[in-house]
Length: 250
Image (cartoon, rainbow, N blue to C red):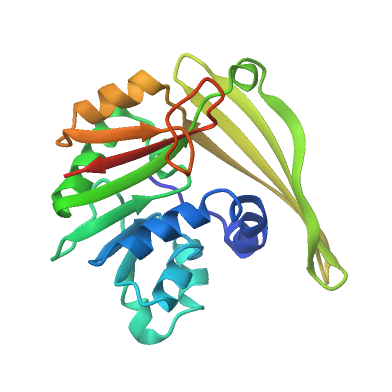
């Protein structure tokens, strides 16, 4: 697993995802953090969308990511002591000398693990780093069969100013690979610089999951106690659910 985001992706990440995701998942994960009295770990901490606020509220939180460019953005927001709480690591083989009461892997972290063996190694590594009765939460989206079959082309999901007189636009296309259960995503960025307009394309594959596949996956790991919810309010799965929110307890 190697996911080094380019600098421009990390540069605009906060601007884009604070708009696209903050009304979706942030209250849920921040509430879970607030309810935990012990050490907390955020897997795929990125630029700190949850981490920064949790730290400001006094949470004993740590985080890691595999992308140096994302961590550089996060470090720029932290003082030296706070920077010691974050590191460059991989969910498959991360290591700490202590354990956690809560580990979260929000916003599709598990979907970056394309192979079964990597998924099992990662979840078992999380298990080993939890205290007894510790909780692990991750999410994936419920596959939309219409998009899985057809994909979609040139969908603009963000187009705003990032500085006065300068805009950034992101255009998304997907190409599904049904046999390998992959969604191959093209992120096309267009933005203004003093030197003129810039254009870049970043490609990334995501592994999608179905409900029973998730159940079989978890049951092959060390976790014996888990629930799969259908949204970020922990409602039961329904035919119109858009999210799999998986909550495992050691």
